[in-house]
Length: 291
Image (cartoon, rainbow, N blue to C red; front, side):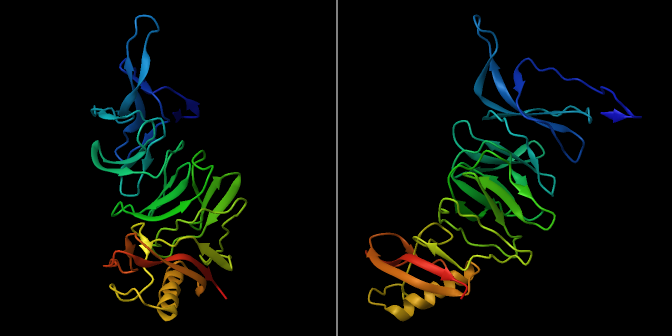
């Protein structure tokens, strides 16, 4: 700590039962929170790390606070949310995001894939970089509001710019996402190699068109192509109306080329209703466009 122009040591904590694995973060009550890995003793090799761990709390607030145990080993720096809660990332066995209120676990959220970096958070969103997807969560409800599939991600922490733009690197490509103006449905289209998503200050994408193969609903189900739930003979008018509505939700003006097929899948409408037939007409492709 820097005091009176000099670095001075204010406190030191030693724990023989745990390895300290993450950089520290400071909580609102001035406790430091640090990710840990449990230690097992080996007569030949000495202390060895296990797959289990949690977090410990230290100064500058020296009021003792018990560790949080029973988690996977935590090697990424904990992330503070605007309301004082803390987000931890588990990736050793099962990829999960853990939300703490003080030292109490309030939520475990499964992630799409492993991540090798810390979570980033703004006042309105939580951003998680995994190896194969960029996931966005609402900090109030802790629900997933968007997902972008890619390859080669999860190795550098997402950065949030001064105007709310979010910057990510995946597969040697810098992706720039516009500041969120509303909750967007999941975007489960894998970016093509070399494709960069570039945004403007107004929050609109500069892309003229974007293919969705196939377009999916918020729940990850196939998008139903008919307006009536028991419809299996609907036609182009239904297709175009639904495709246009889907593209408008994605921030485009409307839909261009669409492709539809009948499949034995769980098909869902944009307002969360399900097709009642065994085989349902679903979109195989929608190309959203701004022209």
